Image (cartoon, rainbow, N blue to C red; front, top):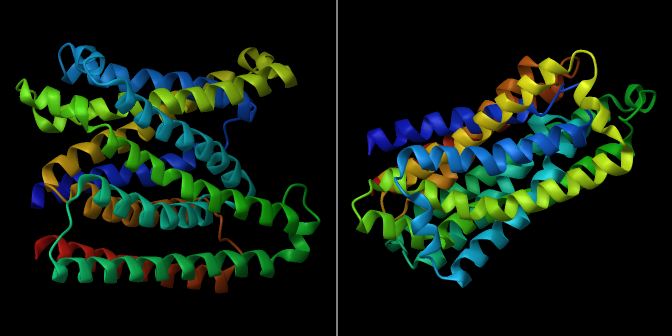
Length: 337
């Protein structure tokens, strides 16, 4: 169990860090960055990683019933839409606030829906402690969101003088963050619903932690379509394909590759951790995954200066992180009962 949570911690480090990669990718436009991220991160790396760990991995995908593949890919498609909102919201209101709202909402749906899908309901005492941990975690997200509103209010006069940071933009970013949180839960739901090829591989002797990668191949087939089609449409409409040859674009290419690797590493390692955690892995693991990643994302936000000049809001944000840490302790206790 200790090893499983250590692996989960590594997943959280990646999950909490990839959001900062969605900032400062100039001279690429958003769509130029996102087209490459869709190809490299969402489509390419899941297949490459799976290929290295699961021999003949596509044979398990081909042996999976089409309805199962469709369900997993559809969940991935919904996630793909939410990821677009997520990245745009970060540009509007910052990685700290967006990640807090996103992970808080995805935590509820992403943990309890898989419980229903798997039919793995814990004993009453475990469920009570788990629900308590969820409540505390949501309380932390509320406190963190409050800090975001304070930050926006404290700097309202200044922000309205700056392009792209008005109150209307703040509300748009907030709505996108809320919507992305609901959509982000689809990724864990889709992975849980796509266990068929994973079980086939395990039955053939593949290690369960490696076999967990197969579900991501299914889910991100749909995720790729949503991301690539939207970004490519904007790339052509805005004629921003010239971004790929702009001076200084070498750093942007590196940023795309780095973002892709960090992003998928989080999910791949998370899948391994849930396999190690046992039957409640997709439930308890998802709560801990979101909570720890939220703290790490906020740390990046503080380091990047998102809270600079907002002392009161920053203090409230720190309180929110403290509440989230307490929630993770409660969740850890539930998994040990």
